[in-house]
Image (tube, rainbow, N blue to C red; front, side, top):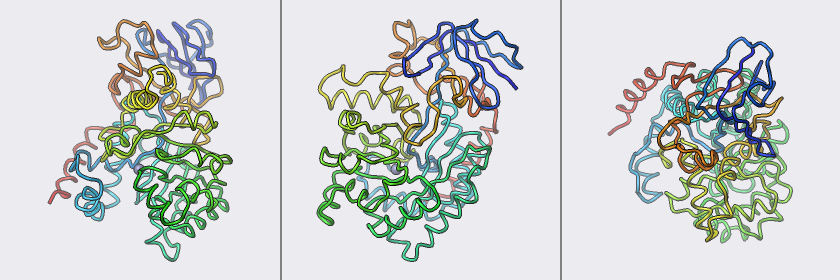
Length: 427
Ligand SMILES: [Zn+2]
């Protein structure tokens, strides 16, 4: 099947920032075969979608998520972190079944598809259920079980992670990429991180880890080991594999040598970092050092929504506050972080609309009061856009949402299921 979307605006986000008005994008077998002005490709197609007031752009890659935590959205918000974890989250997580986690991940998938996300990196448990949700929803998933080194003395959970990777590698038409996920340096001591690094090397897997998230972590790790979280992680060898560093808020200038050989990059989670009062990513420091920077939401239990438009706004606002000036971090920087930035961290070729790229794209309905007039489409998307403006979501060439209706699964059934499951998690 060959498809084409013709639209009022096609924002390619290619390196030159090309915008076609009006424009078209065609794809076949999951790959973009042409991008250009409206009449640039006249070859016949099987299906054409016309969205005269639409903006076609690359879909978002959410670089850090715990998707099933949608089940805990809004639970005991505004509590201090450890009280929230110990009294509210952990006791309920202990009761979650694989079916609960499937339902929570499908709810997250509905929210992500609705708000223009085409793929996400996830760290949780019962990952077979998460992988099944990725397979069923049509999204892409970079999936890993969160490993707590202090609770894995024999490396049994690490071995199970490697097994999970074997089971799911290249499943769901190549939309699932398994990874290893040592949770953080304060839950995974250095010898355990070294073991994970070795397993990643042996089985050719990427690593997903929370690093340099809070001031407390920086202070504790530095006191305990005489090394910063980044230096400590680098010493264990994990950066010799592709590594996705979630948060990175407290990366210091003195950490740059330890990051020099990093394959992968840092995923900013500005809403989570602001809500938990963790701090602001040193974006310029990392950008100037050539470190790829992507964007993610973190779990909905701490961030509340999986809307990447909200993350783009928050990232821009916080970077401007950090810089003390409004022109250093621009709207297009936020758009690139949410698309090509995360894809680059993951080592995936998506994030721009160019011939040969994966057909992962979205259409935003521009015919709405809050998106008019259109002096600057980039500024409108980042500073005025919201997730519910998305009307089409296409992943690997498959239309997962059309005219605002999810096509790949029954969204109403998932919502009913989640409501009945949550009833069992209230005390
Ligand atoms: Zn997280």
